[in-house]
Image (tube, rainbow, N blue to C red; front, side, top):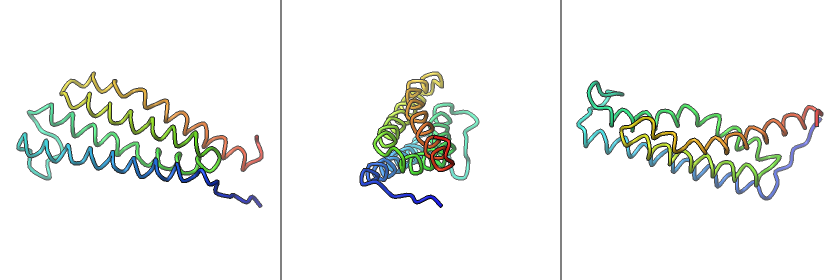
Length: 139
């Protein structure tokens, strides 16, 4: 039997998760504002003639596609390395913001401005693997 205790520093991971929810909400508001600006009615997901709207929508959609993995790695890996995971979570959030700002210009190549966010993802992945390996007695 393995006993897991929650370190006091785990609160930083919780704060990173809360911060990430603000990033996701900010992106949703940007999509709503773009719908209004470019007159794209609900439930249309993507415009047939407005690439700028599509880029803004895609930036949000891509974040939602990656969000479950981000959260589970942040919250599980954080049990082993809370400060590292909180830092990784902050990097991921900043990367997602830069990604959205670049992408929303209408030039999809500018989304790469946020590629540094993958550093945060790899930090979370490493901590989560270390946690799992510790539970299994590999490390």
